[in-house]
Image (cartoon, rainbow, N blue to C red; front, side):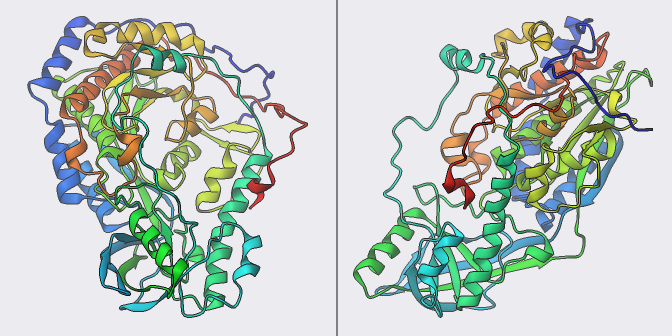
Length: 536
């Protein structure tokens, strides 16, 4: 029978005493030796990025990655290697694409099809019209003006020349900013406003189709000819009708300038993309190192295997996936016999709303709300954390701790305590032997946007590592230059060593990690009036 949380509205309740039993230092020496002198991290990374490449959820590349990672886990001697499916949507991939300006002069433009938009079915050409549309209220201004046009729907920007160095390593001042308790904010209406913005994408596509637009284009949000091509209408019922491309910022602004003075430039697009509906299930990949005590539960580490399509998914999140895989290889090679099982997860659907890790939570750990959640697509991500009460499943208490890696290929510098002060001394003890490798920081702050979020949301002790940002946020994240060249080998090897050490500590600790238990909060600001622009 399922239990429902009916807890006092306290934000932190320690359910277990501090974990002890630090790993034998000789085991740490073996982890370091295996993770440096015998490392396979970069050969793993090279195959994943150069041979398999981009791994959009349910694309052919992702299917290859699902099979290849399972084979590697089995070769390394892990057990219970398998994949688990969950409802997702269409596969999609790019065979080729070309976007050219053909008048007033011929220029090859730097551009990419937007994910899950349809093909052009050959080359189409048309004059462009700059019609910035960011809200449904803008439709009337452009009604009757878009037929036979390629519609540039982004308002042209002025450029984004960098004001600071794009490459960064963290320092003491940065850590101090992270080590601050920030009171949580609860605004249940925010999810509704986000849902309206998601609905707008569907309404925009319907408007463009009804107006007879040939295709649409957006401006890349980074300069330097970087492309991204993200799109979120991946279920069959939401598939757009109008082909879409993202054009490099410099090229997009050129088109807009010419259109401003006239006559409008003519652009041709050939978007040779394909849908794949052979299997609408996406799959998470799992592998175990079996524990010696069946009653002790398990600890877990994960990273998302899926990526976007513009690059090869190297630092987002091939790097995290490689650290997970290399930590698994190291511990399996050592023949460790931990008390708790150590489970390794490679998630799918993270880029579309953490859907793979959410599926795991709902299947094995807990559900939220009083009824079945029938939402699909990105809407599941937006509304899920606002559902109450939390309903634990029989396996809820088995997961003693989850550790996530998903911030590029930078060195692991420590770990976020997620506003749970009870874990701070435990993590400091575990990291102490690794201080000379740069992993020293335990900060109270929270971090979001990746696969520990929904575990935290149901009270599972789930944590994300602090990483040196390098140039992850400035130019690599989701971009067309996210390739092997930008992966830092020394940092990835260090990350796998840190992860393996933390996992072994967690697997052998006397008690599970203390839990920060969520109870339904009261609205933080009951007098707030939302910004009208958020309603668009």
